[in-house]
Length: 242
Image 1 (tube, rainbow, N blue to C red):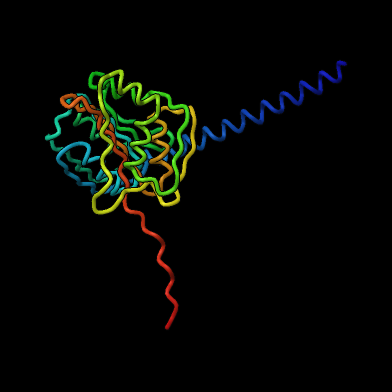
Image 2 (cartoon, rainbow, N blue to C red):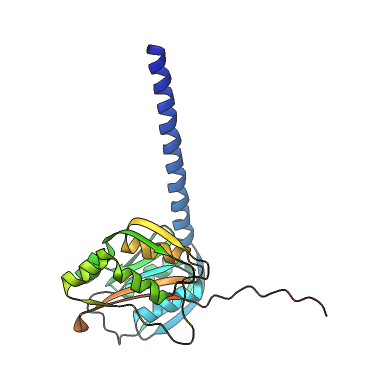
């Protein structure tokens, strides 16, 4: 009996060690990606836009950095923002930016850069939406950014918060020069994730959608939610000699 218990204890301990080592390796990989992104070298970054939404979108697209932006409460849409950075790491650029704009701060988690308001500038409805847990969500191939937004708003959890707070959600429209998609072959199937985690996962894994933004337009009682994607080009077919 004692020998049987000893063997069981040994195997149980081995299983625990394997699980712990696997979790440790995964955590180390995530931490490494965060450090790599924070230490990414940038040079001669000069951007200027009419508002912070346009600035962060331009920066994300120009440098291929997945960024989630939570716009500060009572942000003035007509306030111009600029980045004038000579040389250094992404971390140094961001520290320079938030030093000039005290209402914002930043962090990098799971390889995604988050730019969000400091405590005094948080919008409670936006914060509630981002932390709302969604039980299940799926994305099929060739899903447009607009379709993705519509599907998010249609989830029972998000729909309940919007109704409870008496606001609607503007996720854009289907049209324009081209239809923005999350990716020709991009799919996703998740469960029990917060809205923010879902948005972060999309811009991290999508080949072309690298930026999301959320803001509360208090005057319109409307939440502004967008996922921005670049045009996805198909590989050119190799030409055979005539």
